[in-house]
Length: 188
Image (cartoon, rainbow, N blue to C red; front, top):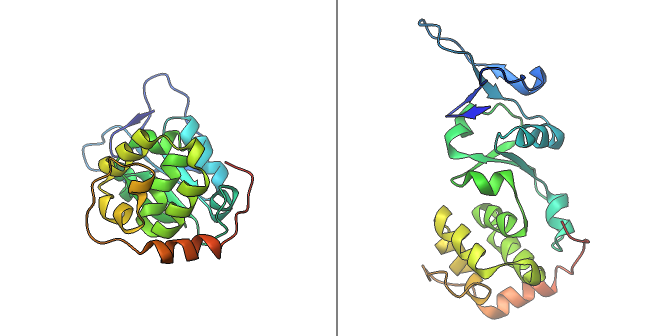
């Protein structure tokens, strides 16, 4: 599959399951058929990801397994260039870096969480500190332009290279959040 704002089948390539693709409306010149990815479940996102389409369903269960008990409606994480073409009942969370969606690990999940729940991102990062490469966290924060939310929750304590932008929550308040949300889960 080629990814250029939509999904197009390369010559000789098998088509993904049709339930995961919706043909886009054709214009008058009859260009090659474009398909819009359809994601209705975590399994759909995983199948598309295996075929090179950057989709990842971020669920509260996954965050809870990383040690932070939280509940939220799932977010479908996709790259910015296909965000408008994805058909899904889930909320869309567009990101710049395709690699982070294709192979999401703890650092990538921290980056996703920074967009909508920075406190959860902080707690997941602190509780999974041995799994977090500070240089990779720095790269993810800088590539996505998330310096302000990272500063707000003091991620510089984990990755000192992250530039400080804006003000930070007090250490006492952050300690309160960590203390009042006891660890749960067994890892990713």
